[in-house]
Length: 165
Image (cartoon, rainbow, N blue to C red; front, side, top):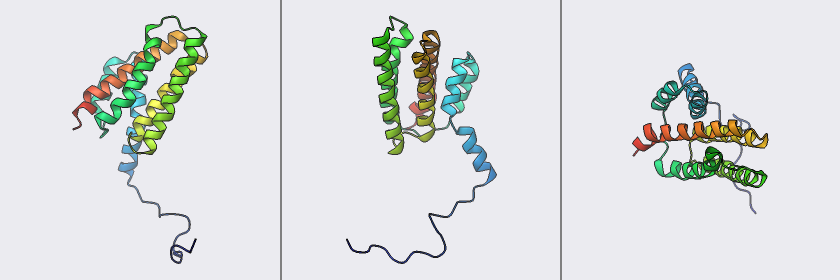
């Protein structure tokens, strides 16, 4: 109702000043950006040793409990794809709906800082690939992507997140 705040600072217009980042810091951010997605793609491409090495080198401070919730949702939804059992239009639409719900949940958890940005963005990218394969009725590709995503999640969980206490 009343005026809140004081006179506006004359020194800046629009927001906080940009932070000057060192070249090393910028390179480190690029290196870890979508790192989980890269691990997924290595598994998907059959580069298992490289994928495991990347999982061991992955850096995260993600808590187990917050990761576990999303992990279980994804694994449960990918199960029918991995099994490759009768994926008719009804089952396909149900899976697509669940994958969409997971995507929304991941974005929500990212915005609440419950999931780290790299993990959230990587998961969303991998799930988008699975959804696109399903939409195009490329069930072998969807199964391969689902298996790769499960391997990536298990590797990161085992090598990094389970160690975070």
